[in-house]
Image (cartoon, rainbow, N blue to C red; front, side):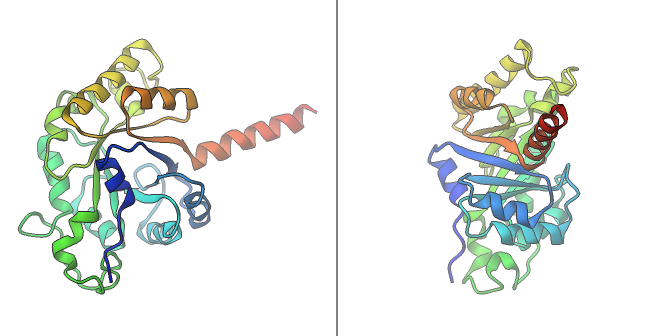
Length: 255
């Protein structure tokens, strides 16, 4: 039995733009529905959503067979958490709040088996199709996409050093946290932050490293793609639900 192919990883390496969607509802039904919407990737969040491991497993199962590759964001750059997510079949990880080269190397090591890293061995994990993938321990990293999140001024200063670490597939710029570190409290709409975001994309593009970002504003998403961002999340399940529910309620209350 073959190792499942990570379409997102290979498309990103080929320079193809990948359009994604954020999943924060902790719902297998939501992921199941979104998986066939036509997105290239879905982000299953555990940093800012109350997801726990069994919930994530169910969402990974729901995503299987859809158009989108499921990527999981662990709560922290922790090798134990990363190991457990990989074992249940996460083929993509977005590691939050990576500040420097050393932390980037730690994240890579957590996704690799010894001697290249420190991932613990389980012979019958879901990731290996319960032990049915021949030579899984040797080939697992071929289909694991590792994305690192740059979301502070310190990390931005270390951008090239973080991005240059072997095993990193892309750098995700977190505009809300990054703008807050500039004292703007989640507002990246001004000229200063727009310049920062554009420059980050330029710096990564000059290195040949894919850059990612999130926005729910369609015009801004298209602008980010023009600037060189190649994996862009264009909305979230929670945001979509809230905005449409609010709008529907207003229309009926107004009448």
